[in-house]
Length: 235
Ligand SMILES: [Zn+2]
Image (tube, rainbow, N blue to C red; front, side, top):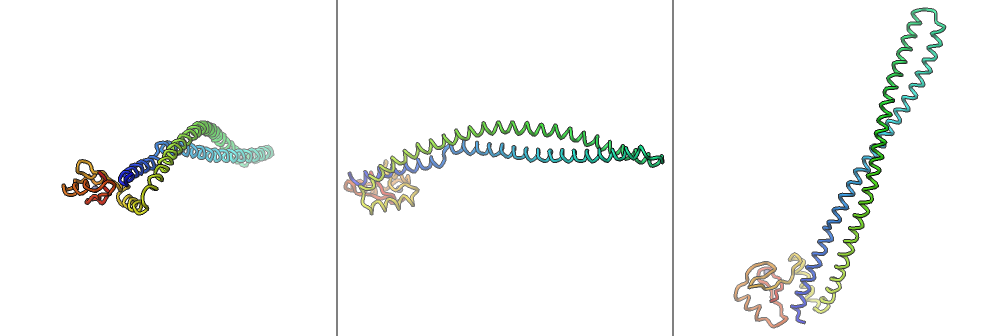
């Protein structure tokens, strides 16, 4: 097999490998994983926020309980004082204080009721989000499994190509392989171009009639070179 044939086969194979690697790096399945992960993060953040809010509400309810207990104890003391007081002015002062304590208790009761409703709503939100989280978790697991399957499939394809590549490379001299690799590195992965209708299909520039003649007159297996882009040229 002439080097030109091996080289063009190697180039086609490497182009396929590059395309496979590009597909592996830009998997649609990766995007799905990304989107579903973000969805999960949002729900987890909402659950965390709902929990913090519940803790605040619960703490405030406990504080209200404590204040109500204090108020009740104080009111009992004032009631007892009121029963033994004889001066009208003092009795009135005690009654005003008792009325103030009752008003505070009413306020605390109202606040407590609205906090209990809020707590209930927060729990419902958390429960709904927990249900969503389970659903999103299942979708994420499926997305990850799809992604892994896609990666595995492309990986197997790539392995097969890499194996074929080794066989082609072993048929070339190390010097030619080095030249090929260097060109690939500097010319966007394409080291070998074909001469198609007098045009280099690497740089898409027309060759002069003299250049075309020179390349066509090369003995089989001998490599031409594009005068414009420097790629190895086969015809
Ligand atoms: Zn060229």
